[in-house]
Length: 153
Image (tube, rainbow, N blue to C red; front, side, top):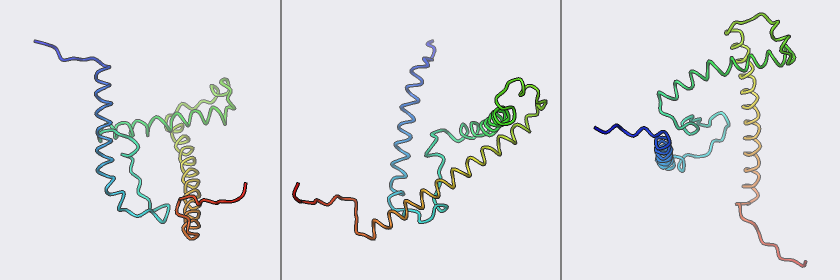
């Protein structure tokens, strides 16, 4: 009786190849849909699909997102209190007598929420400026090719 091969390098290579195949199949499947969908006129009407960013199974993605939901705000909260309130002094940070997970988590959650809101505003402004630029280019007759100018040098 032979034991199955448990080579971690071989398993990693197989998983990488499998992920590439799944990504290619996903792109082929959704490429046809993407060609026929018109570009969004409004920033907030765009479709956001997290599966395009993370190539994980449904159960794994839910577990990772749940753990990230618990750990990331807590870590950001501790870092915020250490840098802002304790002014990056370890002695001052030790004197703060709050060891409550919920407090650190809530502070970190609010900091992350503020950062995300600022990123959304920045993306909306960039989207609006790109839309305005593309409208100006299309109204002037520019279609992406360069015109050849011949003159004296």
